[in-house]
Image (cartoon, rainbow, N blue to C red; front, side, top):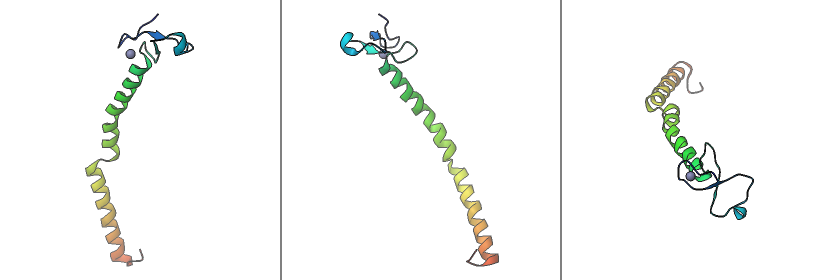
Length: 84
Ligand SMILES: [Zn+2]
C-alpha cells in the first residue's frame, strides 16, 4: 500500500471505502493524502491572498482614484451646478 509522501499515512485508492481499509487516508494528489493535500491548498490560497488583496485594495491607488473622482465632481459642480 502506498504512503503519503508528507505524513507517511497509509493511502487507499479513492474507490476503496474507509471500512475496507481501516486506518488509511484517502489519496489527495501528488502522492499526498487528502488531509495534506487540502492543507497545502489552503496554504497556497492564503499565500496568494495578500497579493490579490494588495492588487484590489491598493491604498494609494484607491486614494488617488477617489481624489480624481472628487476633483472631477467638484469641477462639474462648479461649471454645471449641483445637478451635474
Ligand atoms: Zn498526509
